[in-house]
Image 1 (tube, helix red, strand yellow):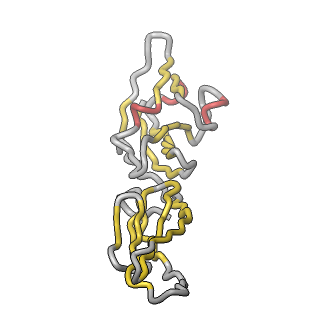
Image 2 (image 1 turned 180 degrees about the vertical axis):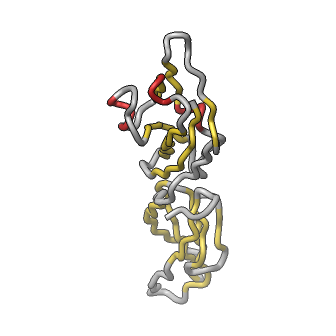
Length: 171
């Protein structure tokens, strides 16, 4: 699994068992995406998110070379980082309604492995009954005047991991 602020994982590659009928294996190298372990039968490798092919190459005393390979899958199980505006002031239009996009409540949410999507919902549905379900916008109306309204921002990464933060909206 990926970790922290990078979209990669340190993987311990195992030593392989091998034999040679004509003599001793003198060299084993390990090649993987983004790296190479020279004269090493296994070891630590930093692999990116996704599927990586690892190739072991063995050389014997006569210079004969043989190889084997396998795939390692690194998955993104880390939640994205939501960053909410602490307080958002909402102004109603002349018809007493304000439809606010989720992006107005976001202050730079991110994920180490790629883009995120943001959705928003209200804790109470004073104006529109669908506002308690996550969506692209929330609605405010005259029923919200002079009261702080709690809003939840959900940030989802490309692997489906999500995290949330809360915002106070003043109307």
